[in-house]
Amino acid sequence: MNGKKRTTTRDIAKACFVSQSAVSMILSGREDIHFAPETIKRVKRTAKEMGYEYRGRAKKKKTGTNDTIMIMCPSLATQYYTTLIQFITQEAQEHGLYTLIAYTNRSKEREEYYLNMASDTGFYGIIYTYAPRAVSSLNHLYEKLPLVLINDHNPDLKMELLELDSKKSGRLIAAHLLELGHRDIGYMTTPLSSIEVPRRRRLEGMQEEYERQGLDSSFIHVISGKREEQETITGNKHYDTGYGLTRKYFKKREDILKKKEETKTVKRKHLNDYSTKELKERLEEAVRMEAYEKAALIQQELKKREQKQG
Image 1: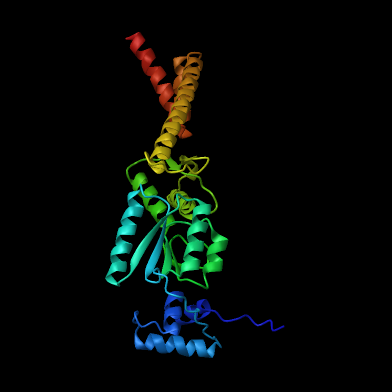
Image 2: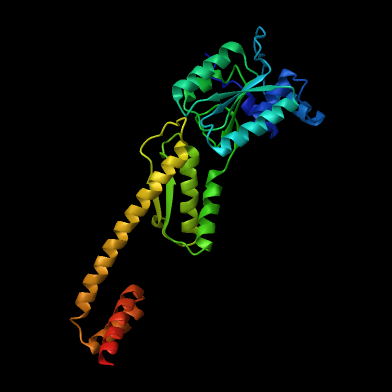
């Protein structure tokens, strides 16, 4: 058995500094897509040098979907996805293509259904607008259909990637809130599962920005949903989940502040046991140790005593 690794279009793309889809289209002789002549020559020359043999896809009987792009969409109630679908459809129409919206509600079973449909009927290609659930099925379909993912990079997937940088967006969010003077912030999110790369990377970006500015990332309080809520006809699961998590967060904050207030009350009772002279000495010590919260309590007690004497 020959142990030499077979050259792939990914290897050629890396060597030529172009995308994998560009290599596939150049080697397949696609006439509806145009590349610079020097790019075509470089790709073909590199493929030959690396011993790559192009295996064209078997021609399929026309079924009416050969000019249709399937768009995998998890939600039709979220403006991000509807806007994305609109622009993809407009661009497809400019090239004489059609689109079919495959609404999955983030269900793996629905994804499998649509992927089987695409495999059987020969769609022009598939665009995923979110992190896929049916990873194994997608990887098997990779050799049959052009697949594009609009999302953060996932090393488990064999797809062309229009990469988003959710970590950067997290850093920008944190920097903006810190610039406004906020320190304690809540991060409300639907489940942080391993497959939901953007959600986790946004949080990582926020934590990195806090650490970059010399702050403890524990100031970011993560309030996460326990499971993916299914979208209903009457409501938007993302907004409903966010609303519920926000209420939960403020209830938790309210309890924390209440406990802090109770602790302060106990401290004030202890301060009554000190003489005014002793309090002034403790105030100097608190300021020297930069224990400003403690110093503020002592100042309040001293001021209260001054008012009584006056």
